[in-house]
Image 1: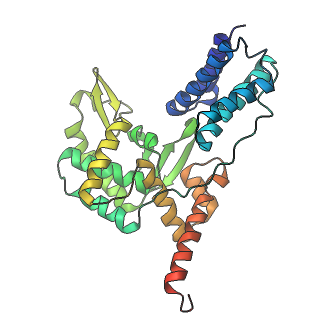
Image 2 (image 1 turned 60 degrees about the horizontal axis):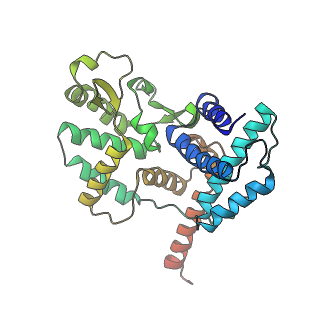
Image 3 (image 1 turned 180 degrees about the vertical axis):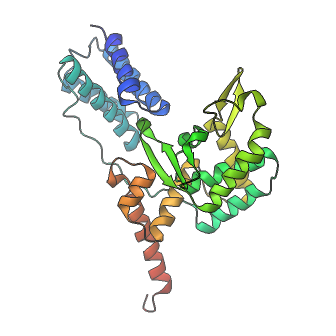
Length: 303
């Protein structure tokens, strides 16, 4: 069977069984398309390619000066692909012996608690309906430690005002319940009662699951795009005079760092952020160690 056939089966598997996000799917698709081009150029197929062929391909990627992180992602894509082909179609797992390059752990950028307050204050200055919406988005992204895709796809039924929890739908459609501070719930409630009806056309208000942050595209209610939020965030960063290189994910890192500083344990942080592996959360212990070193050097009487 040809390359395109197996590639199509793998893509269907990613979408229907693995239920990866659109961004993750696009990344896998890009990596596999690149590998398929190599197979065709080398007159190979998934069935005939051996481990040595995959190692030649990986070396060719390394020569392109890709970062260790990018190369690791491409190897991960190959391992998932060949694991699928081995389990479902009895092809040899030629990717089994591929070795990941050593990826240097970099500490993520995060905002201080004062900078988060400054950012929220900048958002509060715009009292227009869209300004209030932007404030709610920034507040929720930080307070719930959400990914940007989780925020933009929020629907009204995910809020539980009686219990004070928000049900977040994460990667692979896995759900987690996140507690929200009372002030955030009050801000969301005001937005829904007063602002939301002014932003959403009346004919869409009766929908059973309208998006919390939305726009009308091609006659349909659609979630606000991640790109639109990027524009909003950049504008607010300029207004707040924050010079750091900040992305929507920075607010997620910021909450995790602040919670660690307040004494939260790693397991609780893992559940809150929706990480499958606890070692993903361990980066925040390094942040805390770095901060402890700074405090020690500045405050210790013998330092």
